Length: 121
Image 1 (cartoon, rainbow, N blue to C red):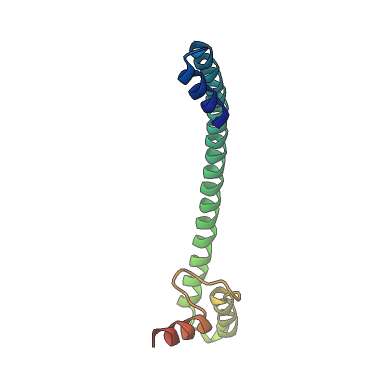
Image 2 (cartoon, rainbow, N blue to C red):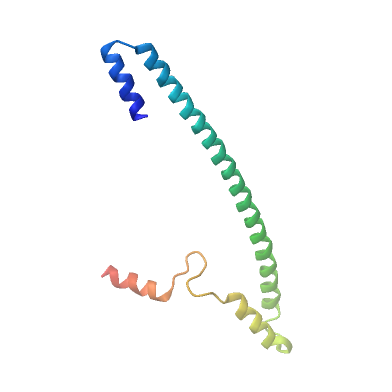
């Protein structure tokens, strides 16, 4: 586009060939617009695909979260029951376990929390 602009400016300053330069400029611009429009449409399609994927994943996440929440509630209701106390404790331990480097929103790893406290002083 820079070369086209230079050609337009140089022909306009001399006065010769201005209509031809303007036509070349329009062709170049419309070609880039076509490419840009195609790129925009491609990106919009990609965005729509990704949006649908995210919605599907969120729906699946919510489905399994609901199941786990129901299991948690059952375990909490039976927590005082001595008959299945060990089993319930194991299930709750699994439900509340986290992987290293992964926690829920707002959860901080102990080392990070200590570093932040030290930085404040």
